Image 1 (cartoon, helix red, strand yellow):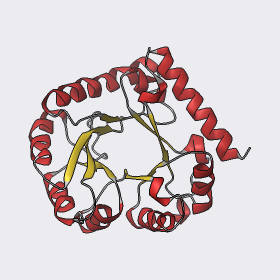
Image 2 (cartoon, one colour; image 1 turned 45 degrees about the horizontal axis):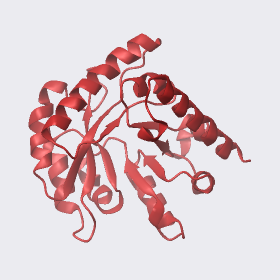
Image 3 (cartoon, one colour; image 1 turned 90 degrees about the vertical axis):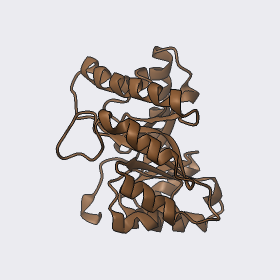
Image 4 (cartoon, one colour; image 1 turned 90 degrees about the horizontal axis):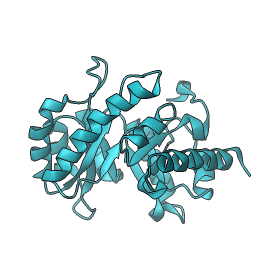
Amino acid sequence: MSTIQQNLQDVRNRIAAAAQGCDRAPEEVTLLAVSKTKPVAAIAAAIAAGQRAFGENYVQEGVDKVQHFAAQPEGATLDWHFIGPLQSNKSRLVAENFAWCHTVDRLRIASRLNEQRPADMPPLNVLIQINISDEQSKSGIVLAELSALAEAVAALPNLRLRGLMAIPAPQEDYQSQLAVFSQMRDAFLALQQQYPQVDTLSMGMTDDMTAAIAAGSTLVRIGTAIFGARDYSQA
C-alpha cells in the first residue's frame, strides 16, 4: 500500500469516526483532497486509491492538472474544485475548466463566471465564501451581506448556488472550533430554507475537521494529511 493510499484510508477513517461520534452517516461528508503544489503523480496515486474530488488553489496550476487528467481514462470521473482566491482576470479559466468554485465573495466575480461559463457545460457549482472570523487578511463576506449576494448569485443562469464555504481563524481547542463552525451551520440552514438546491457546507481541514463535522460540514478540505507537507517553492 502506497503512502498516499494509506493516508487516504486514515483520513476516511477519521471522517467516519467524527461522523459517527455525532450520529451522522460518514457518507454525508465528502472528502476533498487539496492537491495544490502537488505533482500529477501524487494525484494519480490518490485516484488509484479511489479519490475523485480534488481542490486547487492556484488557477493556472489547477487548469494544467484538470487538462492533464481530462486526457486520461479516468478523467470523466473526476470532480475539480477551485478553492483559492479568485481575481477577475483569472475567472475565465475557472469558468471553463472547473466544476466548482468555493470562493465567490462579490457579485462582480459571480457575474464574470456566469458570462464565461461555456454553453456546452453544466452550470458552475458555486459556494459563497464567508469570512466568519472577520479577518482582515481573509477573503469572504460577513454574514450580514449573505442574503443580498445569495439572491444575486441564485439569479444567474450559468451558476448553481450550492452553499457556503469558510476558513475560520485557527482555534486551538475543540469547543472554540465548534462555536465558530456552529455560526456557519446556522447560516447554512437559513440559506437552505430559501434555496432548496443548497446542499454543501465546505468547512474543516486537517486540524479542525472533527469540530466541523460535528457542526454539520458536508465537505472537508484535506491536503497535508493526504499528500504531506507542501512545497511552496514550486507554486
